[in-house]
Amino acid sequence: MRSGQEAILAEMRRWGYRFVVTPTLESHDVLGLGLGPEQRRRLFKFSDADGSLLAIVGEKTVPVARL
Image (cartoon, rainbow, N blue to C red; front, side):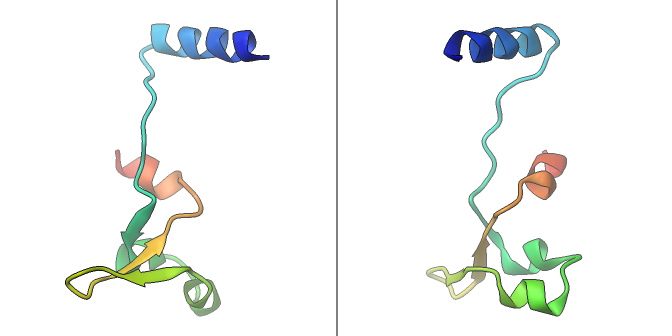
């Protein structure tokens, strides 16, 4: 199975794709755009050192699209 994964990744690299790492935490305001009130309420939230509200990213479409 691992060799199959490596072959697929190698082919993707040949086509110019690269592996990206997106943030695990995002600003609550940015992450909450397009979410309904119930979805925003259910986000797992943190406050950082300066008091900004952050949330865990559970779905990677927005961070990848932003790249």
